[in-house]
Image 1 (cartoon, rainbow, N blue to C red):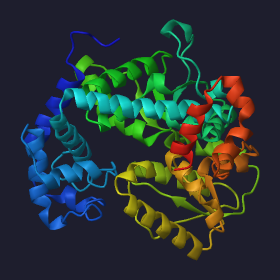
Image 2: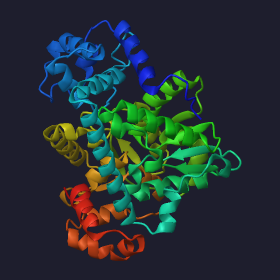
Image 3: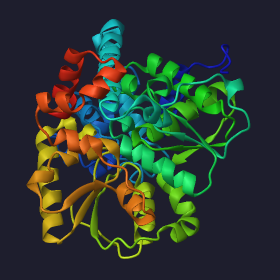
Image 4: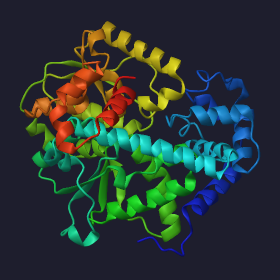
Length: 433
């Protein structure tokens, strides 16, 4: 348990922000490397001034409009990180600038916005997952949290799903099938009870984000595994780059190693190869994202080991963490998707595969508009292993009609005791908007 007398999350962030202020030389390389600057209407020639404004925000000053705009459109792409030669993590710097900018609204307004944001996400996750799975299957990927003493012997690892992958449950279920085939012992943890805190962090509520993040770190530690593997890239960044370093600063310990599930698969590739018993004769392009480049490398390594499968790279911008982050610039998001589809068509792919769940939810609604299949990369791994778990989210979303979706899921709505008006509202907002 965290020490109640230890340095707080906010104080740990403050120390790190102060170190950033000392280390940054205001060269502007991070701004020049950012793929969101020009789409946001900012001029890379003003890079030094933009960084000056960001640092002013970190120091408690008013900042500048350009600095606040840059912080607003940050999608955590991480392209700024290798551009810095001064030991600064510009992704963290910009996130802290956004918190400082939102603080101008006042504590009450910030907390209210963060709470609304989180509750809306939680409601959508709860409803959409229950429209697809009966309780016993849902419990596999979203089991109830248990006290530390109830976990028994430490497993090989904890699979940390995050909150939102259960909206596309076939992805998480496929991960479990692969872990089972590898003979790995694991505990599954995720859902709203183990939120990473990014929902609050993005809205500027650092205090609540810290409480949520520290609680989740404690809960992920309960099974006693030294290794936690994450599915969600946002959780990987929020826990791995923000909460865990602060937790270590606060408590003097790093309770576990956190890394993405795809990297774990790549590490166990020689054990996976014999499991790929079914050739997959497909020409596959990936919908790559920039935030965790080693994930992209790992996915390509694993898919390239599947007999018959050819992975090709499209000449398109690679940006963002997930497509949901690009909602801050909807025109840019739509244009990027069209470029991806056009490049995939010109490359003659049979398959365009998402990496992450948020991207997959956005992608599959466009299946009627393209000649190639739209799947998640886990489906390709499953196909090679002879495992098929239907993409129920895709089937429902392609109905494009609330009444049809409600009728199709009537039994599950009754089984889970869902309120019909809530179902309609969530489907309209989260699946059909």
